[in-house]
Every structure is written in structure tokens, then in C-alpha cells.
Image (cartoon, one colour):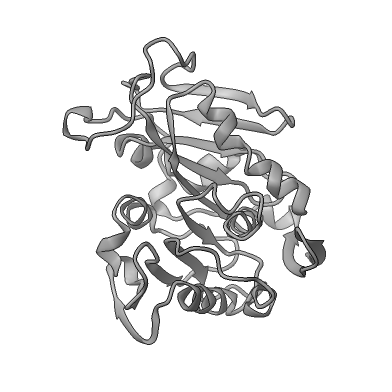
Amino acid sequence: MRTHRFDLTAVGTVTFSIQVFVSFSLLLNLSACTENAAPPKIESYAYSSAPAAARCEAGARIGEAGVSDGEASAEGLRYHVRTPSNYDATIAHPLLMVYAAAGQSGLASERMTGLTSMATASGFVIVYADHRPLGIPAIEQLGTIPASMAKKWCIDEQRVFVTGHSDGGTASLALALLDKTKKVPAAIAPSAAGWTGKDLEPYQCPAPIPVMVMHGATDSLFPGWGAQTSAWWAACNGCDATKTKKVEGGCTAYQGCRSGGATLYCEGAGSHRDWPNLNRVMIEFFVHPEKFQ
């Protein structure tokens, strides 16, 4: 098992470090919680009860309903698409991007997270990206997948939500900070991310953004890092660090945050290898972050 610190240079003169976990032996044994025991299933979405959404011209998007594996961006990043089974190509859908842990394919990430059924039933198009070794160029390329997706499927690019585990969590958090990608996500939910509070110190705060940090209490690889990064985001989002409350899933919600800056810290009992049992809370947080403030 090895950890690596990569020195990455952002736009301008700011230099920062991201902790990246690379352990193929661990990845082969990544475990998911019981919610992930059943094979992924594509669900239908109740469009009749959906709020008003932007629309696409009929016939303007050629992406099909259901499952589409082996898609690729212009940079050659492979990803796997899941839509509601009754996907309507004229309605702009929210997009849920799932970035993989080190060495994982998007399909392995789908099995680990178990997000497909709940996401499609909630009206999301969900995409699982294959892993790519991290660095600023790679993260910036990962940030191009939503725009690539929107060329084939009817996607609302103002409602792009990102999550991922380990390296995927690290990438999810970085997307909200880098100059070239910080406008891509509407909200982030990193899990077991390789960032410390010290890594974040060189950064200027972006505009308020909903952030749900998930981290295992027994993560011995990145011990306590989730608490550090959630505190940094809470400060950036203008929350009152002295006021918190417990919400669904055992998460801690910071209070008094600026509009659009809901901030959660969700510490589960798992280790670094465990995907948290918080899929329903995550989807609700993405759809209605104001409920958690």
C-alpha cells in the first residue's frame, strides 16, 4: 500500500498539493455497503411530477435511453451513461458525474456505489468515468465530460453534480477549485478524498457551492481529513462554525451558511475502502440543498 503526494501547479502562481492514494491491492478489495448488494437497475422517472426544466429541440440529441457503455470525450476519457428507462430527449436533465477510485473502471465504480437505480428514478442522467491518474491536466479533462455528454444527451449544464471515492473524491473536490473547472459542478459530494485542510489553505474561496463531505471514521489512510476539509468549506461558504445540527444520515450540517452554500460533514463508521451508505441523502442534498441549512 502506498500513498503519493503530487505537487500540482494551478493557473497563476499558486502551488498546492493533493494527496493521492494508489493501491491496486486495496482497490481489488473495495467493499460497498449493503445498499449496493443488488445489481444496478435502470429506473423510470415520473416526468409528470417534475419541476419545469429547460428543453432541447426534438431530434437535436442522438443519445438513447437506458445504458450506453464505452462513450469517450474528445480527450479519450472513457465513461458509461445511464438514463431513466423512459428518458425524454427534449427535457434537460440534471447530470450526476461519478469519478472512480484509483485503478477502477466506471463499471466497477457503478457496482461499488450502487447509485444507478436511485439516480435514474430521481430524474438524473448518471455517468461513471473510468479512472485516470490524477494531476491538473487530468482533472481539467475530467471536467470536460459534462459538456461532451451534453452534445448527445439533453443535459442541463447548470445542474451538474459530482461525486467519487478516494481518487474520485479527490478529483470531485478539485473540480470545484481549479480555475478552468470550478464553474462545472453545481454541488460536490467527495468521499474519502485525499485532501487535508493544509492542502486547501493556498486557495481562494470560490463562490458559495453546496458541499457534502463524506469520510470514514476508521479511515487510517487519510485519518481525520474529511473533518478538516469540511471545516474549510464551511468557512468558504460563510457558515457559522460554532453552530451545527445533526441531520439525516448522521451528518452534521453547518448553520448560517450563505445562500447556495449548504455544507455537510458526514462521518460514517467505515474505513478508507468503504463507500458510505448515504446515497439517498446525497441525492436529496443535490436536489434540495436548502433543506440542510
